[in-house]
Image (cartoon, rainbow, N blue to C red; front, side, top):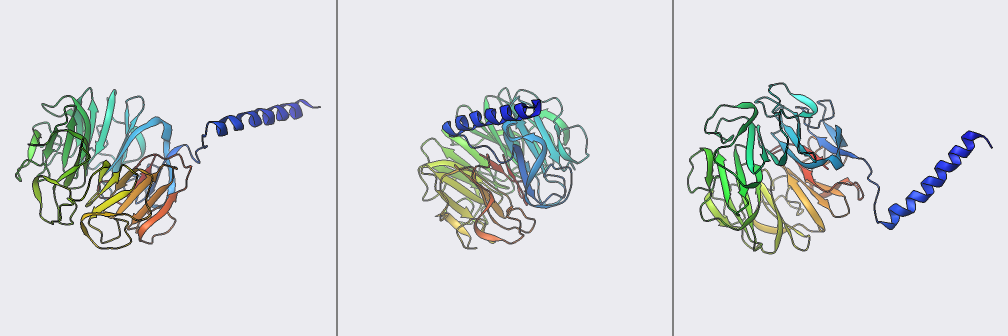
Length: 388
């Protein structure tokens, strides 16, 4: 036998040995090792080196899914949309629009592929707003980008193209960003906010902007925060949910459409495992993996088969075993325990990922089971989607 024949036979034998081990462990080979992105791309926010929209999931350049701890989409529909990704080594990468320095690289130059945020290491959480971004390091918050309303939390209103420190805040375990405000959850279960408050989204009982963090009064035992464009959800340790801010679409879930400057109870909701505030609508995943939705629904973004706005939570039919969700302006995403990614709502830029531009008021498949995805993200009020 020739050497080539023996070598080929050996490789085949090795392959035959390795397959049963993977099957025994119950591991499914991922279909693609990369972070996936699709939809609108005018700012290069899909990270694929182009600015062309994409109707099916494609790879973010050089960003392996297994290396990403957290990804947050920011911005809107035009060339300001961007994303930040926290890697497992504690560094942060960013890409997309950079009109106000939201990429944190010291420039105002947009970039359609990932690169490092200047000088960041040891980071544990990230968040992206409309044109600002945030990172938690050593229990303190860093911020960069637009600062028109004091959303960088540094006591001023001057934008920054590199990370600056948010004032007077420590022991932070998570940070989330709305369009022009930010929210921090401290280790003691208290919530702190800063930035714009024209709809009461700071939860301080008034409409006054703040350029430094302020504690949300009367709110304790919070275990999770999530922000929409101008509203906030907070999940408490007992499984109940509070909300505040903008409410013209019913996104606070309190059977009203009036803004709330202080936290209110989300009605008819208990046993909540996760909350997800989207652009102008909201979701809760219950302990059994089922989903409740409320808020603006003109494009079917609630996924209940209708285009009826809901002011209190309603079930999303047929959606179960959900592990993570996200939503932009008019569309929504969910990941199921089998690794499939579903999308629904508006689809004018291909943000549902089903190779069409047809809206859908019920979930359609963006990625199949076994895709390897466990989490999803969208820009704050944009038409792009990410799965990782």
